[in-house]
Length: 185
Image 1 (cartoon, rainbow, N blue to C red):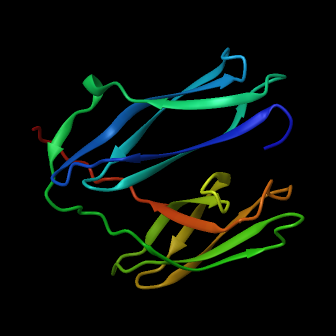
Image 2 (cartoon, helix red, strand yellow):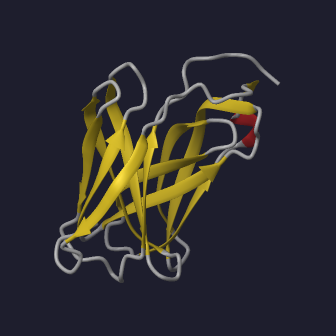
C-alpha cells in the first residue's frame, strides 16, 4: 500500500445458524518478520447468522519494519450473542466484476444491485483479489453512495501499483450492518 503502510483483510465466519452478534470488538495485531509488534488496531464488526464478514483495515503504518503476519482476535467473553433465526438484512447482489489495467494500475469495477424497494445509502463494498494458489494479493474497499430501489450502481476499486502476481479470483463483498436488535442466548 506504499512505503511504510500495509492493508489488512480478514474474513470472519459465524458458523452459528441461529445466532448473531452486533458490534463485536476485535483487535488486529501486525507483526514484523522478527515477531516484533508493529501496530495494534481495534474495531467492531457484526456477525450475522451463518455468514462470513469481511474486515478491511487500510493503511496501517509499519514504519521501516516489514510486516510478516497479522492476527485478528476476538475475546469470546466480549461477544453478546442473541437468537436470530433468519438474517433480516437485505444484501445487494454483485455481478459484472471486471479487472482492467492489471499490469500497471489495476482497476476493478462491479455492479452492485439493490433487491429492496427502498434506496440503500453508503453501502460499503470490500474486494478480495487472490492468485492461483488462493493467496490474497490485494484488497480494497469503497463506499457506494446510493443504490436506488431495485436499481444498480457501480463499485470501483483502484490501486496505484500492479499486483504482485496474476489475479485469478476476485470476490466483491457488500457489507450491510445488522439492524439494532437485542436478546441473548
